[in-house]
Length: 128
Image 1: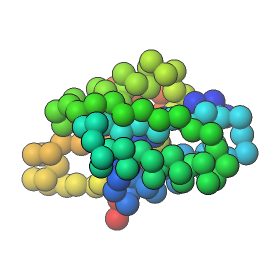
Image 2: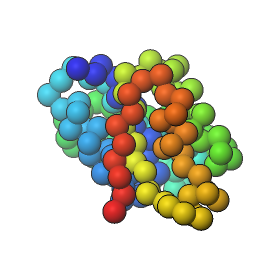
Image 3: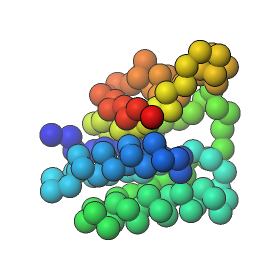
Image 4: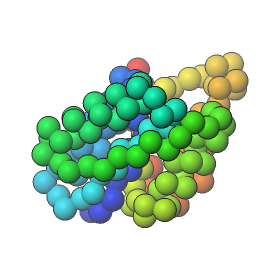
């Protein structure tokens, strides 16, 4: 069983589904849950973190959270991986928006970057 579950959130519906899966992994087990958001330290970022924390607390968990700061899109995977290493996560649970074709080529995939370089398992929740 995993002992430390890291879940990045961004306020999207699919990220909420990933959070639900992370909550399900931890419920009823002595597992730590860390919710992270990568963005500016502003009202929206705080709101996303607070909503995610409330969902986890309402599920009976005692999560921790971190706002990892504003960075360029291509660096998001690196920041998630660095947090996973520093916090000693056993698994990363995250969403993929399922972009394909030109959108994927232009925007890339944070999830793909995490999967390629992760030292721990990555549970990916797909978007519609």
